[in-house]
Length: 134
Image (cartoon, rainbow, N blue to C red; front, side):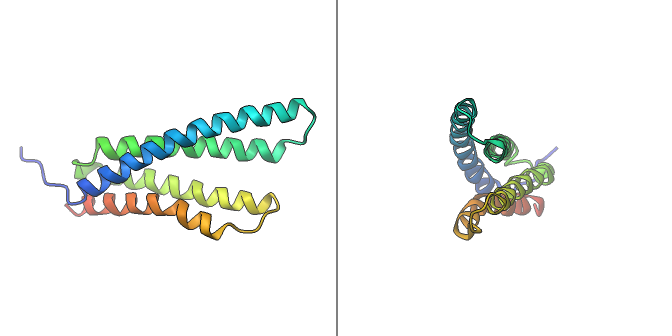
């Protein structure tokens, strides 16, 4: 059986690798942040919103790491394009959720941060979409 060439294989693989790197760094930062939040809580600081932000950061980091791994592993498999697109969408939604949480926490809407945060997931989704067309 001959395998169809995936049109977005290289694109998906590169963005997947970048997501693995970003997800790994974010995971380390999230763990450190949660430890810092726990320390603040012990000292008596109000930490409900901080824990929510830390938890969202941790979930986002894991999702980005998983999406990257799935993208790299399935870059040459057009039949897995839907799975890759799904994970890219999950990462993008979590990015938007982080921006919403920022506003709920009392800060102004982080437009620039949102745009930067969506670049990689959107490129990942585009690579998966190109694979789907194969």
